[in-house]
Image (tube, rainbow, N blue to C red):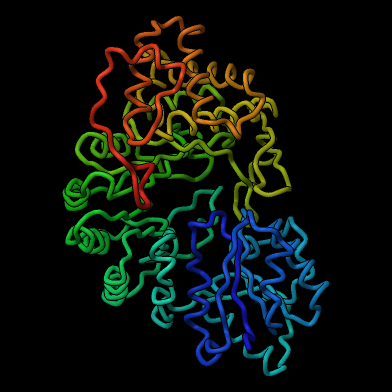
Length: 500
């Protein structure tokens, strides 16, 4: 009989929860009656409840995040209706800071903070009928040396079909006010020798994708070098993802990054803004010269896939300032630029700007900004569509070169703003637009609005769209294929399709 079930709703099927595996790894004698069951936010809530309750567990522990908190609230409602005696324990970022903006009142217990060890203690007390006095349990940081590592609990199916999340450290030294990591007291590191032993076991089991969740991978250069060496000694193909500090690339790190094969390494860099005044508003360190120097290095001297982040809606930032940021980044690199909308997460310090900058946020997940002193509600809506169409065309790489015809020698931001506004008038939607339809609209815009030669546009789009095996020539491009040379076609496989 399974007395304890650990569960969460991941945002996608291909994701796994490292948190559940930490909890399971540290359950000690209770592990033999515990089980991990993972779902996705696309699964039917009542079906999830059915699977969780089929063996009448005593305890269900649920990981709660910004992407699943609404579904978790509904799930708790169903579980308590069917099995009111089952104890529900919540943990995770979405319940670690108050106020709670989604109703979670029916949960029996909430662990705030890192619950790796606290979950075991709570479960033991519940099963021994030593009822804890407090519903909300606030945890101090556990010593990482005392934690059992979770990696052996990734299944063979996980290794074959899903991303494997790993970490070498916890915490963040920076105080960016929009980020929950700014609440961390310090950066703590795991025993690197033990960690590399675990990674080697994963590798021998067939693992070839490793997504590090460390907030500042290259903070400790010695650790970063050893981890990079681990992968450089392996034979490609594989995929390693790191989140890095943009202004901290000493020569030892640079030489190793430059040695990775194409498509093997992804670096995520949180730029957020290049405006010093706005960065100061949110307590973000901004060493512009170093940041630009390192982005140019990554662009020109490495094969790493770079993912840069920009945020719309930061206190004091205008659309012009944001546009200048985007223009600058595109001039530095051809990499992926993720455009996000500011969110107000419970516990963060971004709320100190609410009055001065007129910051108004939704109280419904993901708690995104609705308007502020500089940006109207309509501005925010337009930028959400801008972000979506940017992702579909530029970031997807389906139109990597042809989308640049939109701006050519002009402002990236201003020209793409016009394009995103135009395409929305054609679709009245930002979702469920097929690749065929999207390409046809881009072709139409470049010909009819930008007045570019159809031969030039078609050649560029054919080079973009036909670089992958198996793609059929779209009907709107068939008249222009007579002199087109089909070559260098490649397929995609594994976990780095977008990077390839």
